[in-house]
Length: 165
Image (cartoon, rainbow, N blue to C red; front, top):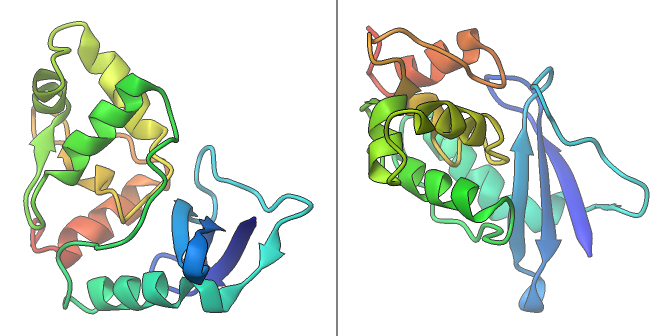
């Protein structure tokens, strides 16, 4: 069963989408922001279930309050292609308060050189903004580039983490 909820946050109203696992636990499939490129839209047949996302919402509140550096949530490991999943796993290894270049992510997933563009595309399709920290990926020259929810939000997230002062 696909469930969803809206959670207010400093970046706007976030749409959380997941599936219910045994025991009523939610497996997070998507976290999107208003105006995001490729954002998920609520579909017929989905169930509004704010209570199912209490743990997710709590961890997001802690993150935005500067009290959490890493999310500990059940997320959908079946989304995306095998290459996208490799890129997304590499994103999850970028520590709080630090950044890495697109080229470095490409190197980590064995796709250096021309693969940087493919890595950028995979990062742009990350369905779990904020939770899977694609905002920590920047250009090789240190410039903030490409964030599906807008560069302003990327700046805010990096500012929250102390990267931008």
